Amino acid sequence: MVLDFVRPTDGDVRVLGNDAQRDSTIVRDRIGVLPEGFGVYERLSGRKHIDFAIESKDAADDPDAILERVGLAGDGDRKAGEYSTGMKQRLALGMALIDDPDLLILDEPSSGLDPAGAKDMREIVKQEAERGATVFFSSHVLGQVEAVCDRVGILRDGQLVAQDSIEGLRTAVGGSETLTVTVDAASQDDLEPVRAMDGVSRVNTDGGTVTVSCDGNVKTDVIDALEERDVSVKNFQTEEASLEELFLAYTENGSAAGDADPTLAAPQEGDRWVSYRLPGKTLKMQSGRAGCSAWPRCLSDWCHWQHISSARLLVTLSRRTHS
Image (tube, rainbow, N blue to C red; front, side, top):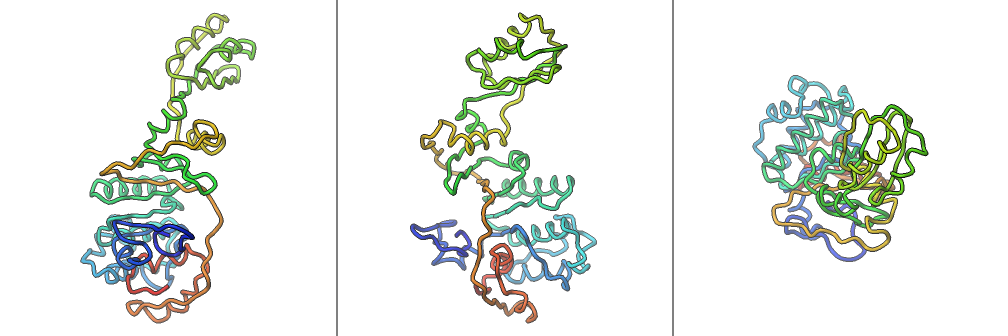
């Protein structure tokens, strides 16, 4: 709906102060998109892809600088069809960065990237946010989201059930922490006093390690309870709830507060947004044809769109593209 691929049944969508339907050309001119399932034109070089993106936006970017920024320096003259999955992902990111967009929509940006590539991607996201761009970051890899996001939105059954900073979400689910205690030996019977404590939600042991989900103010009581059972405590460490645990708390339990409607934190001026999307059905588009005068004619035959993800390439890059 942000890109006007899908029309809402009710209401409207505004992007950067513009109506996403009525002003879709203006909106597309101010955004960059890295779509999931990005497809390259195999016979064109990586540089040709970047050149087209620059020409489509009447931008003044240096193709070599873009290629270098996304880690493709030295590979720009190779045919994109020869690129690995990770290199294609880097190329798509480079195209999305053209003309310093005000809004970046990155769908699974770390897909196909090795650890070094994922790190480069995170650095670019941070740089864009520091530049002042708004970033929508969608990923199934919650560790990637946690590493770069300012705010998180969680969807359940198509409904936004939570929207806040990670710390705010932790507070909403009770501020639970994970206490990991290394012991000489612990039985299930030894854990009964811990299970009975207020502020403890879960206790497990494999014999040598006791893992406790608890409020931060009862950690000392947990250790005392174990020692009172003659369990020798060798070491312990605490971890705050991960984004994955927070996500499960909202999606498996209905909301952090049970079945009641959660209170969504209102957006604040200056917030840079990051969103998380649940996996869902592939959105379909009616088969159609697209053409663009700035692109080789043979591309028209490539543009019989069936999946919305494959359609995003042209619409992202060119205000002259038809859909």
